[in-house]
Length: 307
Image 1 (cartoon, rainbow, N blue to C red):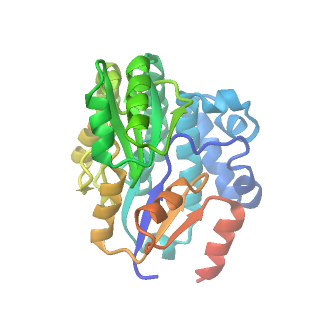
Image 2 (cartoon, one colour; image 1 turned 90 degrees about the horizontal axis):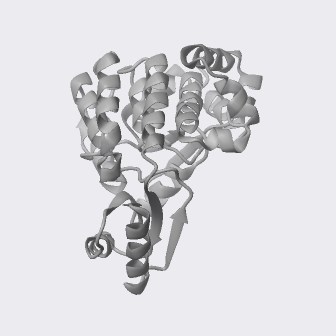
């Protein structure tokens, strides 16, 4: 390996039990979880390890839980691996994790920010989302544009995989139109709000204020922002684009393309699950990705890079 791209997962990757094996295998992971509990004043470790699932899935809990797990994995990687990272990106919530891994944002500030972000997002409950499979991006946009009411293409995750977001009736109608246009499937998502849509505008001011309170330095490596699919190299830019991300679509395919221009040889996803590794293969089967989220996977990477 000569150059690595780092991928950080977003909301939906959480699962009860996440991080338990890391803490059992590595004392330093336990210290990360202790810092998280202290920073947030909630039993994040207990919630991550033992649930209940409905509590862990709540937006304001899932976001810091995923960031904590991803950051713990990052902290456990050998320095020889970290030094190879030339570019990073995170899916929605994961963009905050990316800045924490890049040293732009402290771990504790990152946790507090995504906890507050989750609370703000959870209050904007008048909406929903659905995944549209098997249509071109333009066809999904057309289905949304033809509907009265608020509904937009919110996540461009992979070719033929676009998530729409907005008012419930508008999402339902756009889903129907997408089906008529030839979508292979349209899957309603179990979410608490219309993320990355204009309905999140009510959370924008609160998030901007929270971001202003946090210290942002320049990242150690570029982080490609979801909102504009371009590398960010300064703290002020990071802060600005994290606000924009709230109501902008996640341009994940373009994000991967922008990362590829930096020239990584391999891609690693650190955190729970392997959603982004799967999307990477759907975007370009020539890209080599590896999910590192369990104690066994961390140990394997450490052994390959011993010394």
